[in-house]
Structures are given as structure tokens and as C-alpha cells.
Amino acid sequence: MLFGKLAEYYDRLEGVSSRLKMMEILSELFKEAGKKEVVETVYMTQGTLLPPFEGLEFGVADKLMEEAIALATGYTKEQVHSEYKKAGDLGIAAQKLKQGTKLKQIVKNDYSVKEVYEMMVKVARTSGQGSKDQKIGMLANMIASASPLAAKYLVRYPLANLRMGVGDSTIMEALAIAYAGGRDAKEELERAYNICSDLGEVGKAVAEGGMKEVGSMKVTLFKPVRPALAERLPTAEQIIERLGGEVSVEQKYDGFRIQVHKKGKEVRLYSRRLENITEMFPDVIKAVNSELDCDRIIFEGEALAYNEATGEFLPFQETIQRKRKHGIEEKAMELPLHLFAFDILYYDGKDCLSKPYKERRELIERLFGKGKAIGPTRRILTSKPKELELFFEESIEGGLEGIMAKDLKSPYIAGARKFSWVKLKRSYKNKLSDTVDLVIVGYYLGRGSRAEFGFGGLLCAVYNDKRDVFETVSRIGTGFTEKQMSELKSMLSKIKSSGKPARVEALVEPDFWVQPKYVVTINADEITRSPMHTCGKKDDKEGVGYALRFPRLYGGETVRGDKGPEDATTTKEIMEMFRMQKKVGLKES
Ligand code: AMP
Image 1 (tube, rainbow, N blue to C red):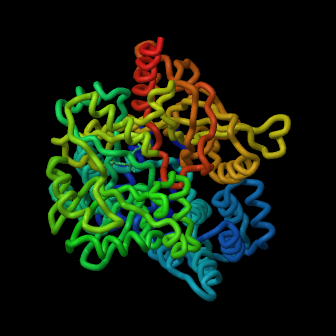
Image 2: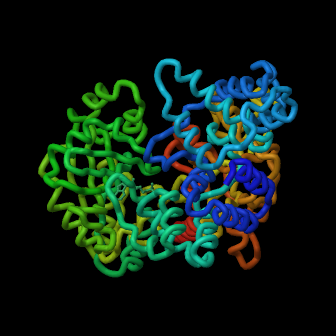
Image 3: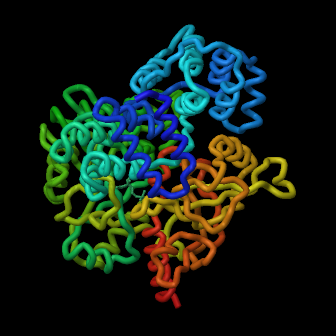
């Protein structure tokens, strides 16, 4: 398929206002891409070159792209920049300039999707001395040979800003329609995606070998598994009742989730968002190699910095400092990490996901705990709410976040929030049980003293994972520092959308819509019912939604680096939290 054809599909996608239509267009696109180009088409549609765990980034900034456009169109850098400022988007600027260019096309014919993909990989891999000019040359060459519409997407793709609002779930459904007879096959594709985290690979499998091939995909070393997530319940009684009898109650540490993959001496680490973070934790690598007596393993744990002198564990904010790239070695000495292993996904060539938790835990206890830096989480086994409550109180007193109760019979449920893990935190005893992670879908202009920032607040949404859409839940106008306001303004102005993005459902209208991309952590007083917001509205008999009361930005980070839009709090969670809040309220009164 020619890249120009792909650009036409992308242009259609950008214009649609419903997710259903989006899926239709995408399935047509994947069919047309065929076995030969489905992998590249999937990655391009995701806006990446390879899955995030491969760590291959474009390394193309606005300035570099402006130079490439100038070279390709014959306009000056200043002219390109001023067109960019006018359009607010470099893709559109390139499209306009291509329409007006007086330069002859360098190459007459269009490149194929595969060719463009390969050139983009080359652009990303070019580094070192002189690499800037080489990158500009390669990009300019592609832009010069493209139609104005194709140029728009050639520019947006390496800037990681395609502005189509397509999510992984939509891609999977479209692949199911294109290659597996219909939407029903999506569940099986999702299972495969959850264990390999590589949608290109899933696309290839289904296009080449149908569902048989997809069904045979297994956990593999150095392909991170999408993490299992926990549900919430407000009381010890409910946890025991829900999990049915005896449960394992582990301490819950507020650290940094790491998935460790080890094959011989080669060890790689992945974050919760499946990024390769091997370089950031040299002490964990050392500990894995010296304390673990096995050849091939995938396990998960929570890493926590601790103060050796006092024996105290440090809060998340301090552990996260370790993520900063500078001075890693010094930090490792100053704040050594302890890794609390809590699950095992693969051991000695065998997939452990389907083993019950009880067996996986036995394996953890057998394998870990011989050294100082890695050990199993502390836990008790109980069927008595009182004992669970006591262990919870003891954990809180020890400065921890709470507990995580686990169903002894449950397999490891990759990529999903299920009642096989249930968390209980101190804050659940207050009115609003937890902070929530929301996706920014729009923003407001400031008034009064905020006017100078051009930023007055956010419109935020939750993720409805059943329908793969974003439903608004809150407008947030407080809790920002001046620095955060200008940071948000600059980040959001780059992802503005000309209308409401297709997967956003809203009744209120912000000054500017943005593509769902960034996640913020929000604290609020409570959850209330609201006719203004779409969160939960379609799930409610009377059609009333949910909203947050007195929401404010929480924590040190402006946007969450470790969460994507589909990792945000879900509609279902908000509804459960509302129910929990009512129960706590009743108990108090
Ligand atoms: P939350 O982020 O509040 O939804 O809680 C889930 C997170 O708690 C997981 O992603 C882990 O990073 C972390 N965690 C801490 N201790 C444990 C544990 N014992 N078992 C599982 N997850 C844990």
C-alpha cells in the first residue's frame, strides 16, 4: 500500500465522531494492508515504531522537523515556523506549505508504507555526530516526494502526535473484524496482547495464521506481560466474603512496580507501563544475579528505597527520584532498593500464568529470600476479618500503604483489574476512598490573574473500558502551581483537537479539546451524582452521571509519566468508589 493511501485513511479517521465508524475505517485499512504490511500499519496507527519496551524513540523535535519541512518545500525556517504558529500543528503547516511549494518534486512517486516505516526506523536509529543533519535530510526527502496530505502525516508521525485518538482496544477490534470473522474474536486477541504487549505481533499472528496462531502465543522472555491490577473493597469482612474463605493478605508497599526478566546473566527490567528501565536500577540487576539461583524467570515486585541506618522505608516520591537519569550510581549507594517479590509469571521455560496463586507464591518463597535485597512480600493467611484488620493496622503503623488481599485459587490475570487481587488502604476509611487518575480531554482559558498563562483549568475524564471511550467526570481549576500551569498549557496546546475527539463523550464544552493522552492524579472530597458529566451516565437507569467534589491536582508530578489514557481510573471503579463511600458514610452516622 502506498503511504499516500494510508494518509487518506488517517484523514478519514481524524474526521469521524464515533468510535464505531473509527473501527469500520480501521478494519478496512488493516484488510488493505494485508499480511505484508499489517505489522507496520499497526505500529504506525499506534503512533510508535516498536512497542514501548523496545525503547526506540524517534528523537525528532519540533525545531528539527521545521528544518526538514523548510528543506523539502523551499520555504525559509522562519516561514515554516510562522505557519506552525498560525496552524498550531506542524502537520497542517507542512500540508499547507506543500500545497504552495514552487519546488519540483524530488521523486515523483509515493513511497510504500513499508518503505516509510523503514526510513523512519533509520531516522530513529541515527545518532552521534552529524546525526541531526542526517535526520533532517531523510525526513525532507520523504516530505518532498509526498502529496500535501501524506506530508501532514509524515510530519506528525515522528512527532508522536497523530491526533487520531485511536486506542489499542479499537485496533484490536478492527483486527478481529478484518482477520478473524468479527468483533467477538477481540477477547482472544486481547489475551494475546496482554501476554506479549506487542500489537504488531498480534496483528501479524492473526493476519498470517488466524485465531489458531493467536491462541498458541505464550509468555516469552524479554516481552513484558501487561500487569494484573487490583480491585478495591472497603472492609475486611467484604474482602473475605468476596474472595471466599481463606485469603493471602500481603503488605502493600508504595514503591515502584518492576517486572524482572532474566535469562542466564541477561537481566532486563520493565516498568508498569512496560518501558525498559534496565539502566535505571543497576543495584536491582546486581541483586537478581547474585541472589537468585535460577536460569530463566519472569517475576514482579515492588521496589522501595530504604534507609539502611534507620531501617525505614522511604515514600514513593523519594523512591521515584531514583528514576532520574543522572547520578544513578551515587543514588544506588545512598538509597539502596529493596525488591519485594509478589508474583511469578514464568519459570524455567514454563508459563506460570495459569497456575493458581497459591502455587506461584510457594515458588516465590522457595526461590527468594536468600539474599538481602530481594525477598517475598510479608503476608499472612487467614479467613478471619479480625486478623486481616489487625495485619492491616500493623502495616499502616509500619508506614506502609495498606494491604493487598489475594485469591488463593486465581491465575495471574494479565492486563486486567479483577477481584483476584483486592486492595485496602487507610484512605478508604475517609470519605473519598482514594486518589483517582484522570485523562485530560480539554482545557479552559484563564481569567483574571490566570489570563497571562492562557490556562485556567482542565476538563478530565475516566476511561470506560467496556466501551473504550472517555467519559467526563470533573472540571479541575485548583491545585496548580504557576510552573504547572505553564507546563500544562505548553503540553496541551500541542495536542489540541479541532472538535471533540471521537472517543470522548461529553456534555460540557471546554475552550479547547485535546486528544486523550495525559493522565493526572486528582484528590477530591467525595464523589457526587451529576447530570453534567457523562461518567456512568449510560450505566444508570435515570441517566445521571458521576462527578468529583472539590477536585485538585495531587502529588509532585504534573502529569503521570507512568500511565497512559487507558490506564486511568475506570467508570466502573468510580461507581464502586461511590458505593463504598455511601457505606462508610452510613457507618459513621
Ligand atoms: P494501586 O496502584 O493503588 O492500584 O495498587 C496496585 C499497585 O500496588 C501495584 O501495581 C503494585 O505496584 C503495588 N503493590 C505494592 N505491594 C503489592 C503487593 N504485595 N502485591 C501486589 N501489588 C503490590
